[in-house]
Picture 1 (cartoon, helix red, strand yellow):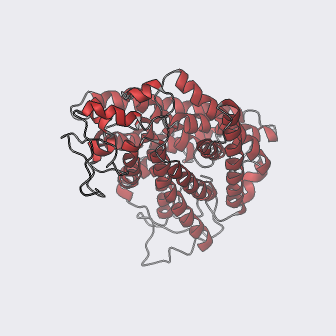
Picture 2: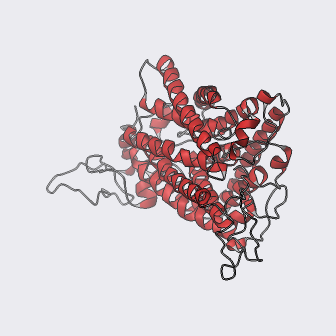
Picture 3: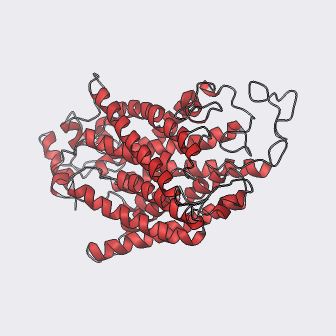
Length: 486
């Protein structure tokens, strides 16, 4: 988030962020700035169920509902964590170089003082906007263990992860007191705090949960998505919402924010075309819909740290390079037999890393100053060669910290009764939806899948007087699971 300075007079505040009974707290801020950031917040929120639709469509049908459930759960749980102490640990006004203070615990004193991220908007609005970033980061991260994670421990892991992983990384990246911000690292909208941190956290989650036990997964590196339609709808919501995700990170209603949105669209377009073409020549000469969507997301991830720093022509190489590297890293994941079925690390970990490094090459001082306030030395376009070192330092610190701390959390949780993160084999074969939620996304009447008591879980849409064959044991559900695979 850029620090866009308000052109209005500074706000005289009390210890609680302003006294509305003695002064008009709206006067120091421009209405256009606040409307733009509020609108951008709503656009970012749309992205959260967008991720749920994307993940649900990519999973197999007996796990599809759990990913939609996770998107709403993340909205709820992370919103509470952000209120409770997440925001103050990231964006308190007296933060240290690594993490914030507890001055704003429970959002105390968060009202009308100019925010640390942008003095053009008040604390309360900036808190709301950044809260949407926190929610979507959590949703991205939990995708690493899809189809095998227990949902109760997932919520515990998410709450702890947001506290000890996301908030410190957001603090050192975006808080003016953070060590990376002081060093001179550039991250416009979350290449590190959102994408690299969630990618590394998801990788740790996938590794500690282990590979899925389903024989269909063992035999095939790829399986057919349960709903390509959901994949497309999720991608549409993400692409649309990303205009607020990147555009709002200008911190005010300025040309810089609109320029960032234009960069966002172009990078997504180039990433989509690049990934689709790579798949066409490498995987059967078919114009893959899933490949098109994956490439668009890779391009969006790659442009995220760069959107408000780079000239628009550079969105083309950023989108293409990020998509190609993310595509290749997915094959490397399969070679190493890492079960990250939703490619969270490839798209967000590798994609965020590519975008951060490329920012060092293409950042330009005149683009950053389009908001009328931000001054940077730029990147290699401005002959500022040291910027590459700053970007690499931030990227490796973010990836390493997130992976190590995430792993420590999971090791500790697995040693605590009732917090083991993985489902039993019986539950995995039944599917997360029925085993953990008791509901399902698709009509199972013809699937022959049973619940844990040997009963057909279909409670709706049952055709009267139709006899559905039932397997004699839960293990025979493996045949139903394999039918979802290519």
